[in-house]
Structure formats: structure tokens, C-alpha cells
Amino acid sequence: MNRYFILLKRELWEHTSLFKLPLVFYLVVVLGNLAFGNLFQFVELAPDGLQRGIFRSAFGTVNSVAFIVFIFLAAFYLLDCLYTERKDRSILFWRSLPVSDTQTVLLKLVTAVVVIPLILWLTLVSAHLTILILQSVLGTEEAGNFLGLISLGKYWLNLALVLLVTMLWSLPLLSWLMFCSAWTNRTPLITVIAIPVVLAMIELLLPFELNLGGHMLSRLPFGFGNQGSGIDQLLGLSALGTGNSDSLLQNATEALSRTDLLIGIVISAALVTLTIQIRRWRDVA
Amino acid sequence: MSDNTLLSISDVSKSYGSKQVLANANLNISGGEIVGLIGPNGAGKSTLLKAALGLIRVSGQIRTLGYNPTSSRAKMLAKVSYIADVASLPEWITVKRLLDYMQGIHSGFDFSKANRSLENTEITLGHKVGQLSKGMKAQLHLALILGVNAELLVLDEPTLGLDIVHRTSFYNGLINNFFNPQRSILITTHQVEEIEDLLTRLVFINSGKITLDIPTANLDEHFTAIDISTESNAEAPEGFIYEYATPTMRTLVYKDTNASALAPLGETRTPSFTELFLAYNRIDKDSSE
Image 1: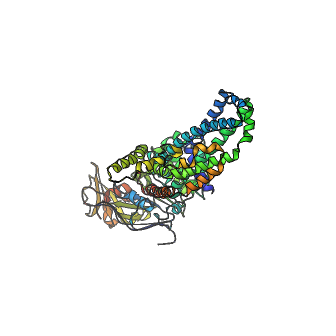
Image 2: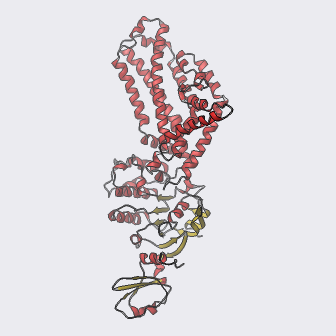
Image 3: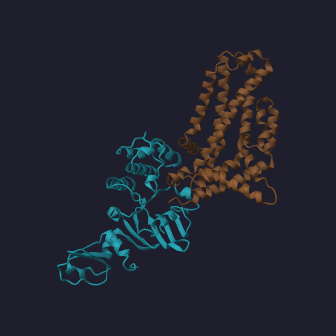
């Protein structure tokens, strides 16, 4: 266990943005609330239902921005994680140590799929709490009441659920990023985009329709590029704050048993296997 | 194959397309040996080392510390250290974290031993690798190796690009702090003369074949060199494997010759590695074997 812990620490040492960026994000939330003061003061005037709505929309804004920030964080981490070590030749050193390529590659994937969402979740929970506390202190007395109005615990649990399903749904896309990081000779980002575009164009020439482009786009997390088939609609991201946690749990369970989610996981497994083989046998002279 | 065998390479061949880079190469290394694998560019040195370290697939059989290096690579690397390139340490990591990392992944890593070997250098735990000069990086890499307590150390041109001061200090550190009768070092280099006093065994490789494999202690039994003044009228016997002439001196190297036949011509000596290397890698005619 200690071994995996040090491997994980190594990832955070190398990719300092994984904790620096969330910290910056959190500070922006705090400063934003301080700067704009009694942002929610008018809540006092509103009846209960509206108060909830306003806080939900405050949380919702913070969530949306955080999701975007973290998508880029995860994407650039994955693009970088097996490419930079080849570019700076440090792969020669890493590969001389008793850590198998399977361990290395899986740990990097876990960093992107588990650790980064965990950091995101912790960042959001801290941000939500800070908003509530600051608003209470800054005079929005109703913020105190708000704590009693929605169940924060449930809200955060729902948030974790959304992140979990989203990561599993986007796994093929994330694995594709990592595969390109291990595979391409230069600028993995170009390959990441170019190959799906070419595939989608080739499909146009086919006499039947597979909707490849649509399927690939639908894997973008958090509903970006949502083609109507994405998991996000089912999850009802926007419904996160409705407090209807039972329906979210039900939707998430439904999402996890979907065939296309399983197909995605199979594709990911294939891509990860290829990535391990490339890391294992690539001649870096 | 004795119990003390750390590396055993049997009938190993490797081709890239139609180009054969290793042709039935054999090499066994036991504890307590410092083996120099020496050959011209493209002779197959690096390929052989890569095969021993499980970095490429080859035909034939290789056992490194008893492990199949391709299928049990990570296990093998717990006992084998190698430096592929002294410039390969990650630039972004601090020395302290690098040692922490080594301790985390190597069960036998001795942090304090590695740290002690940095005491005589200008390297501190707070340094980032990127701040170190190339010579200091080599010192750091050596400190990591010393902390690992590996049984076999494989070095491929370890001092490439280092100045003479750092090269010497690198080899001194290796001999004084790493080497003991249970351990072995396999080393390739172009700077033949630099490891002349180090090696216990000399192995030449050319065109993918091992052309010479001899303990350095036995060199004088088999090889004789003689320097004959050009003023001398004495007729040197035929059969030399190497000849080198300057305006004042003619140097000849003989293999398995009767030294007493040479005695009248002057004082005989054991040839240098460079002379042997040149004898075995002549480009003016086919190699002697």
C-alpha cells in the first residue's frame, strides 16, 4: 500500500497543478464572495422556496465552473503523463526501477479517474461550505436557515455520485487521451482530435450510419457536446440541486447498467492494454 | 552455470529486418566480476544489454538474477540496477523526494547510505535535479545506485558527456562503495583506457558476436606486446595480430606466441586494452576471428 502511495505522491509532485489549480479555484470563490459582499442579501425578502433556489444556483455556478476547470486539468494531465517522460527521456530512469509498466499506467489512469475527481469533490465541498459560512457572516441571515432547508450531506453525496458515473461514462475518452500520450511522437493533442475527426469523416462515406461522431462526442463529461444520448441527461446534472436524491440515485443505477456504458469500459480496457504494451516495449533511444 | 551466476546469456540472437545485430552471443557473469563489454559502434553492445534488462525480445535464453528479464522484469529490477543515461533523471524532482521515492519502491533501499554518498558532493537534499550540472547528476545517480544494494549493476556508456574529473570520481565511487565479491558490474564504454585498471574480465563484441572473453588476469598468458626500435635490425617473427608503427618505434601484438622467441628483440609486455581492441577490430582487413 505504501508503494502505491509513493507512486501517487510522485504524480502529484510532478503535476503540481493537480493541487495548485483547485487551491486557486477555492481562493477565487472565497475572494469572489468577499468582494461581492451581500450577494444573497435579497434572499431575506424571498419566501423559503426562492432562497433555496438562489443558493442552489450559486452552488450550480460554482459547480459548473469547477467542472470545466477540472476537465481541462484531467485532460492535460492525461495528455502529459506518458508523453513528457519520453520527451525529457526520464522514462529511461523510471523504467530502470522495479515498477512494472502495468502498475505505472494503471496508477496514472487512477490518478485521472479517481484522484482528480476526489480533489474536485473536496474542492467543491469546501467551496459550498465557505459560501454558506461567508454569507452567514456577511449578513445573509437566511444562509443559516438554508443549512436547515437542504440536506448538505445528501447534496454532496449526489455530487459524488454524479462524478462517479461521469468518470465511468467518459472512461473511453480518458483512456484515449492517455493512449495518445504514450503513442504519438509529438503533440498528443493533435492526434487526440485528428483521429476521431478522420473516423467521423470516413463514416460519411459509408452507405449506413453508425453515428460515430455522435457517440464519441457524447463521451465528453458533464454534458459538453451532449447529443441527446449522453449519460448526463439521464443523470440530470441540472437536477442535482433539486434535492430529489432518490431519483438521482435511481438514474445513476440505471446509468451504470446501461450497455453503452459497459461497451465504453471494454473499449477503455483495450486502450489501456495497448498503452501498457507501448510503455513496455517502446525503444527510447 | 554455477550458483553464483548473476547473468547468463545463451545463444542470443537478434535481427532488425535483414540486419543481424546479435549472432548467437554467449556471456555468463558471476559475483565478484567487473566485466567490460567493448566493441565498435553498431557491434551489438547496447542491444545485448537491452536484452539482458528485458527491454527487447530476443531469441535464445537469458536469465538475469535467475529471472526471465522480459516476463519478470519488475521482479528482476529489484536486484538489478542500471543507468541507461546519466542525463535521464527527471528534472522537476528534488533530491529529497527522489530518495523518498526510491525508498518507497525499493524494499531494500538504504536512504542514509545514499544520503551519505552525497555528503562529499555539492548536492543537497533541497536541490532540484534540474539545477544540477551533468557531473552532479551522475553523482546523484550513483548515490541512488549505492542505496539500492543491487547484486548486478549494468552501465551503458555511463560517463558519456562527463569531463575527466567526474568520470574518474564516478568510477572511484563505483569501485569503493558498490563493488564487493557478491556483486558484479557489466559495463560498456568507448573510453577503453579509462576502465583498464577496473575490469576483472574483458569481453569484445563485434558484428553481434563475442570475439574475445578473457579474465584480465590471464591476459599476459595469451597476449604479448613488444616495442621494437626502428633502429633495430632484428627480424620480428610473423603471426602478430596487431601492428602499429611510429617513426621511431614499431609495436607488435602476438596471441599465444612463444614469448622466449620474442625475448631477443627487446622487452615484452602485456598489451593495453586499446591495442587489443584495435587488434580485434581492424577495419583494414577481416577481423582475426
